[in-house]
Length: 253
Image 1: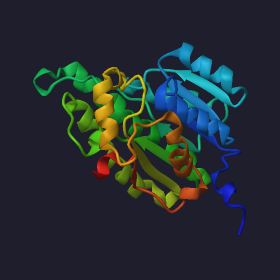
Image 2 (image 1 turned 180 degrees about the vertical axis):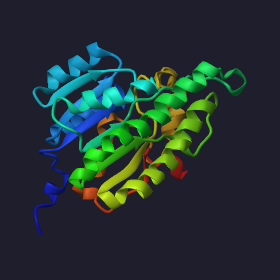
Image 3 (image 1 turned 90 degrees about the vertical axis):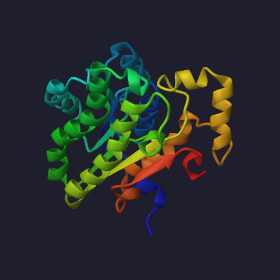
């Protein structure tokens, strides 16, 4: 048997991570680079992206772009492939939660949520898949949510988009796994990020969420590293179409 650690080695791979300017997206970019991949981070905020790239070094590149603009996806895909070649791995961590109650959902809020959370992962993947097919190897990792299967107050648009991610992941797997491209999703529990800022700003609410997990705490950014590397590497070659909940057992109770 070869060294099991080699299963997680990403040396020679190229990864694209959306939402890499902060939170779980940036943590994903850090983890993939540490595992040997060359990583292109995509997000709207160039300053935050450049800060991450400066810390990461020569194996990092950035594309400042708004993925919610669907007519720009093809151009973004071309920019992503420019620094290191076409990606072998794409991690879709960019997202938005407008937190509009059902009675208050607006056209604009609904559209930006669906475009960024659901349409962008599909259309960016669609643009990058041909190069993965040519290599016979690829990894797509979407970001699902507790709201993929649970309804939270003020989350009707966000929840609908993340439920869609669950089915999108299965459909991607059905379409592309025969070409050596696996498609899976990570469903984070409560992690301290900009997106969950309102949750962690309320200590009592954060404590209630921690108590609802099986392990008795909310997530730390480092908790995403192992599951992400598993799904992005050869370690998960026979795993596709799955949503892996990384939530401390929140959805088990």
